[in-house]
Length: 171
Image (cartoon, rainbow, N blue to C red; front, side, top):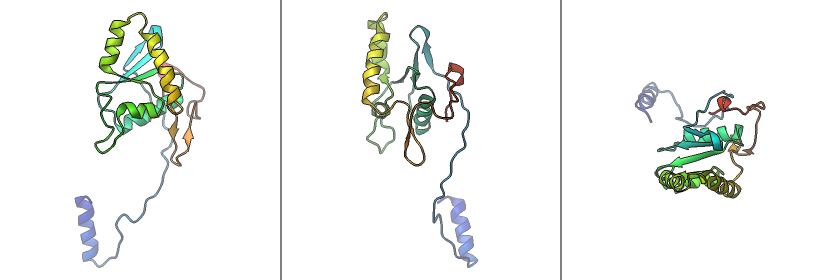
């Protein structure tokens, strides 16, 4: 309880007014909102996008799912300095395992740097092969869960057939 809630509850009690505190939850839907996603790094010659994240928050995870839902062919890689970090303090799920569970390719920052140093001319092919196996192992890439818990996949109604760099949508 916040201080304000406690204060108002005490006021109601003092006035002899019966009440229940937070007795039920009310579901609601957030209306569609057009948002934009600007990738951190885009390698033009390989059509690859690298999104670097030191902290991978719940909001960022939702955003990535929405982006990939609207742009399922986007060759996006999540890059983490510490992919073994947990998504929350109490979770067993790591940044990397969350991405794998959602069919999103990911790589550790140092591993990516070494891969590029060792294979300047061929790193894109190596990433492509790795991405293909990661996406096949994970769930449908870019799918997100609706409030009812059912999975949406591919282009949804929010995409309206557009799929350009400057038109990416996020929540």
